[in-house]
Image (cartoon, rainbow, N blue to C red; front, side, top):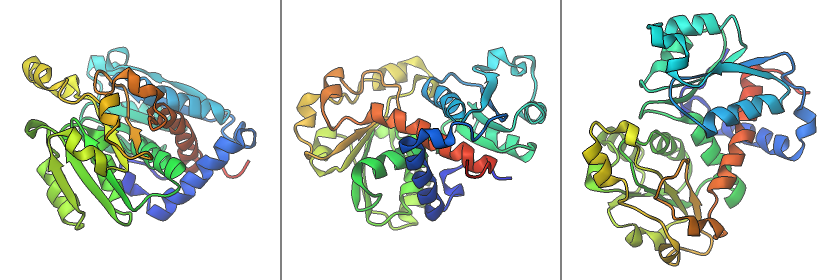
Length: 306
């Protein structure tokens, strides 16, 4: 039995196999439509979610399986004080695989140590979001042809953004990756990411505050929202929330083949006028998330070829 807690739980070779499977599922959905018949996915979401939860549910349904679960802590026994370890012990007797999102870092890892079914980390606090990272990697490979030889701009909340932390960890394993880290001083990438991931792996990166300065250099711009739920006070959030707004004027500074990604939801950080730009790939990215989660569920359940 295998869990997914971090994008590093899969080697780059295993990720290529997973993405090849996602490609086949995208191109030939009928081959996999009954792969998980009789199997159940539990979605245990202690935090609100639209794309992640619904894409997991869509993925399981596309594979012919069923879904059960809860969409907030208030609608689960966590509201009564039940521990994550007790919850997963119970869920293990109801379902065949579990996707868990939790506001506390490490909660899905704790669950995995008490589980008798595969557990997928669907986001834990500001720590990791591995299936979003799989989605990001799959989107990059699908639209750029490969992963590597890219200059990637990460913009916005780089301090609390778990999608950013996961993506950096995953991308440093590929050849000739460079980062431009675009954020205000208060929302810079945490020191442990800079020292233990970027510096340790000799990955070239620069930190800048102005988005306009970075745009011409980028192959990929990964926008993120400033997350209200991660701030300790409203005043700091309000001061930071509109620090970056990507609009058509800024897009004119970018390469013709640059790709804009965003894990969504967006608030104000990407103007709707950018949606019609052919380089805007964030809604396509959300669709690719279903295919890669299908491949992940299929792989972790070891259901075999249909």
